[in-house]
Image 1: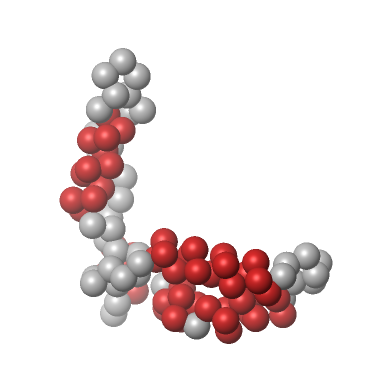
Image 2: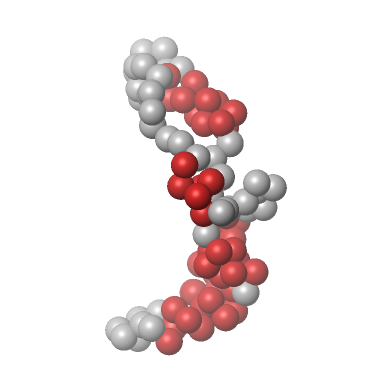
Length: 92
């Protein structure tokens, strides 16, 4: 998680790391900077830290997946599908 936080805060340097390790030579600086910008949007600014799953957001997602009247994506609420165990240990 610290690496993703660093990459989001240092997108130019992160793009350089990718380019320096691209043995194929297929990547471009412009593309990698754009991709890092998109990753930064996905990471966001969670006040609890990168990687924290908000239980309310999880519950909303489950409700949407179960909410399809004629064709729900899932038919029962998942039990034990996630925990904060690894996230909590990463903060120690």
